[in-house]
Length: 307
Image (cartoon, rainbow, N blue to C red; front, side, top):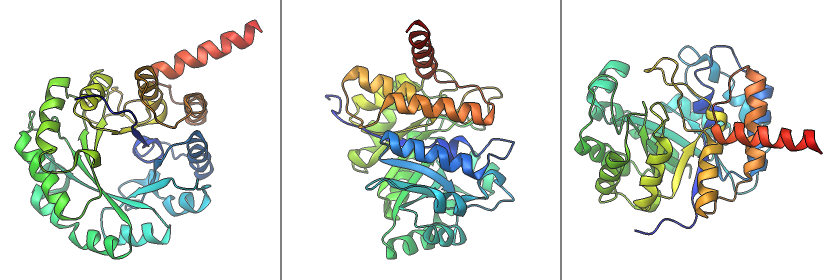
């Protein structure tokens, strides 16, 4: 299959990337980051989470963040919503898309939320119905689709099952997420070959973590399966809680560098993203883990020093 000529990059740094930061990131910093990413041309930004502050204190200011950002016309601003209360917050904040989630691993579901996969997704039925009534897009995220920290290998049939359940809820897009970054290119091919038989290829996305340094290879494998939506986090924000010290989300700058090299259109200004990655890394005192980002920053500074 020929590679896509254009892809959609969903920037998840402001939500998925920042949510595990121990020190609270000021609301103004989050707003500034989202505005910089909007200006860079992202068509979709995961901006906030409407979950209980008790569980995710970093996301307690979701309403303030959504109220303070400068929305770019045509861009989608997504928020994570675990329940009806979260949906109420999302609707009040004028979110364009809500994100719901379920694991493909039975062990992960039981360990984290004390219920089966089927039960976890059933809880989203009223949320999905209410969102559809209000004309809000729904995205379903299938976590642990390529491996689980508790049970190890996840059967492809389990991934397909969760995709079918999300499809029945009316999800507009479904993410296949390698939550712990253990996936390899061969497995990516196998998983996407299976899920594209039960859900439209053009509405599936790849969400890869770089724990084992395989994210870009896995993205290329997904491209070979015709997948044209990918998630990434500026500066590689977000760690992996199941592998201490490991990186989490693949860095957006690295993904954009790959796409530019392949001649695949994204509509996103890489230089502006590099600047945004430098901004947030300095703002929160965190190392920038994007290889392309650091290389391009070093090159720009070297050229400036010589001029």
